[in-house]
View 1 (cartoon, rainbow, N blue to C red):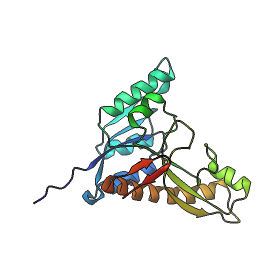
View 2: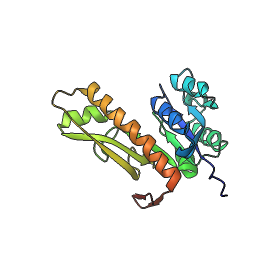
View 3: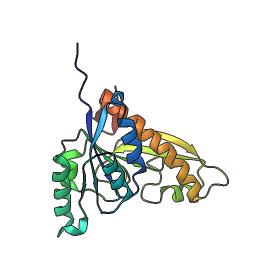
View 4: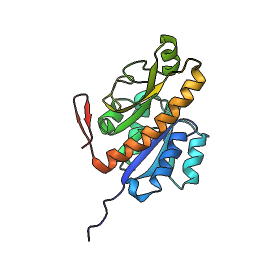
Length: 206
């Protein structure tokens, strides 16, 4: 009898409420999903996401930027803290800090982020607002591997969300979040179960 493969180890980084984290925790409760969240990190104390992790019995850590004399020192400390947990994937689930070269050298081909537009359109922190202002009829969410740019890394998957005539920033953002969360859970499951390759800008899941 063949032993089942060990579950992939996920470290999830958050800055806020942790709704995407909760979706991953729920998915990981099924052994068939193929992954477990082994640690949750944040850049500040007191977030609801840390409470969610603690309630699930997942170890947590906090690395505030202000606790270090320089951004480089913080980047080194964050990298070392995550490395302690030997992750197969590191996932930004609403982590609002840009990581630096030490982090990317360690985890660049294993660090996933999700963005609330169809990249490369409308990068940055105001994606849905910018999409509305431009008048597009279709936007969505993008899951990608992080590189040194802002929302510029190789794309894993995208899901489309129509822009309705009566949408405002709030309604559009909420519909994108729902699609984004489903995509995040589905695609991380595929990555950990099936593997992936990155050649240039192309991500392939067998």
